[in-house]
Image (cartoon, rainbow, N blue to C red; front, side):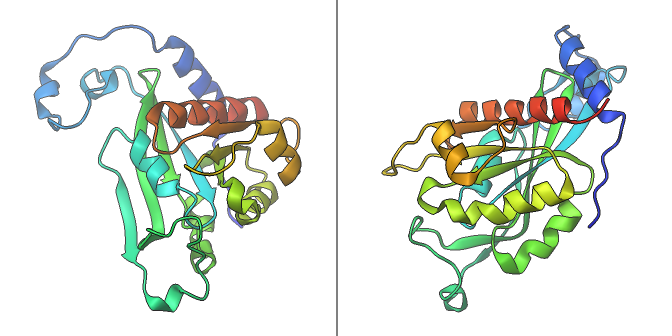
Length: 229
């Protein structure tokens, strides 16, 4: 199983996050940017090279990974969705998401800029078991993983938890609250999943960008704390 994390990333990310509050003046290259893409300081000021880090978003089928990436991405997200057919009926449980008619077959990809000069590349993993082979490729270079959990189907997130633990990849758990589902406290979910006390557990809504950003900030902070300098 391949897993590589640059030793220089934690210090670089920490420095970028603390030093990224200064303002920048637009340069002549600004006009070359796409009109529908938010302009970031590092895009027109070549002296401010951003620190880019990669994180994974994993979890069971239909837990909200594609929605998560789409909600937070400042660019048009890359999706690799295919229409579900009758062949998937015996293996894919649609109880919690009866209106779902597509599934991710490779990955979702989005980008978000945090603290001006810290760029987060967010990769959503496929949830179905037949596509799990993609995880070994997607995990390369990641500093951490976020496991999405649905309290109606908590057992579905165990494969992602086991995978990140076997990789030694720092991870956090984000409980995606679905309408009509019972609300639980983070500590209740921690106990149910037997999550170690040092692993963050947060409650969020994949449709709401603010809660998605908070969960990513929690993950990055935990990854920096857990990765040796």
